[in-house]
Image (cartoon, rainbow, N blue to C red; front, side, top):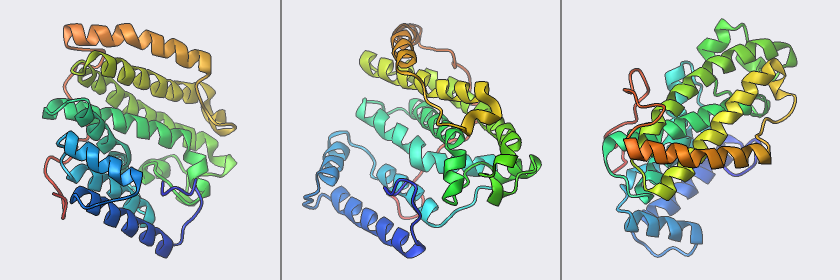
Length: 266
């Protein structure tokens, strides 16, 4: 998460890295002169798109959650983490695409949540090997998997049962995101529909492989990706034409992003 490709950081190193990220981000958002092209780009995008500054800062909160070694007892707690590292990115991308209405921003969040839930399931063993467990601890307990043993081969059946439940939840967010796709400009709609299709296909592959899903990294083949991208075009066109998609349904019982700034975020 912090750019070390899964390596462990000491708490002090992690906090120092986050403090630097916060400081540079706040300088950029305040309109101060910045020389790093990353922060200069952020500064320009936020200004050009009239993006609320709370969103980049909420994204950094996900870094803090990792540095603090936060535990996720329930599904809602896991999904809250997903919001900070991916859901709010969906919101920011929607702003870049011209979206401003709250219902569509909710659907953009849903797609980010679905992506991250899928990532968690794909990388569960790899993450556990560096001390990070994002699956709901309550569900792991129900499956008889100790949190400190998530990476152990003897618990693959239990891990798969939890992952199956998480992917079922991810599918609800994927379906919900379609209504947001229907509100995007044509090129953006196709691109987001393609991302929806490719990422959800990773979940399908995990379910097909069962407990052996973590014997190798799960990824979609190049040919399959091309097919999914091409098929996403007509689906996105249909979603825009009729103002709905496969997930045109209320967001009943789905986690909802915070509406107002939290803490010191403005």
